[in-house]
Image (cartoon, rainbow, N blue to C red; front, side):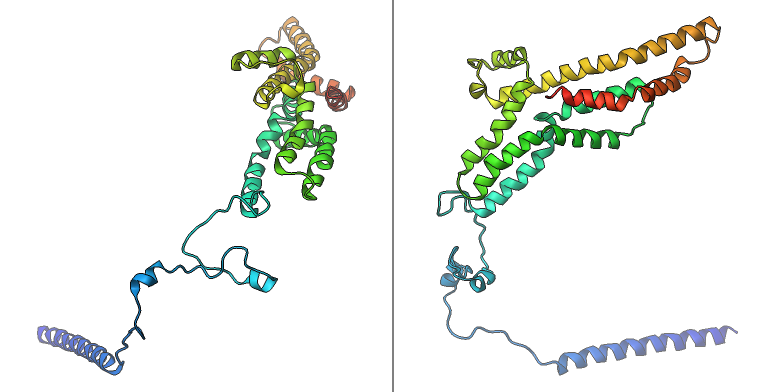
Length: 295
């Protein structure tokens, strides 16, 4: 039995050795069969001059027709042109600035429009109803955005007519464009900003101000507008809370008189709050009154 096992192991070792020898012979034959490929330069080249050569094929602005424009230049350098032939920003840099501005639009929408007051009042309404997450945040934010767009529609139309159309027609430059964009926004913010808030930031920044809109800096007007909006929103929220607090007090007094002190008053008062809100058409009153505060 042992002899048989030894014989099998010997045959297996021989087979493995034969396979290795065959593979080695195949590799040697491939090396001998495949011809050698020599790479050499034709002609005499000065590698110093070649190193100084650029792979830039055509200079910028040399395209005379769409076919020339379609041929892509290949360069080993990166160049940003910030000044065009007409003294304006180049197209690439203008696109970069536009994309940067688009990324800042949400912050501008929050700080320089009616969004702050609207979203705070809507959240106060939901908290007063004590309905936890009904309506959800997505619904409140969507409603606030559409109400903001509705309220800011005159400002948007003025910006489009006085800034975007002339700039698109090359009638005004970039500085005039930004001035025309900020003018209606500044006027909207100034109308809804209290002077004591403006005086606060004027005093902090040690800036002189004669009380006119045209002389107030934007870095002073924007935080003053935000504080004024927060104050107004909290005042409206307090007024909304009053009837619902009365309902809570009545329900709590009734439960205490009945001896049901272990029953949370909010469990009983919430259905009555919703009933009162529905019967009074609360969303119509709150949204209508909120929008009218901007007119």
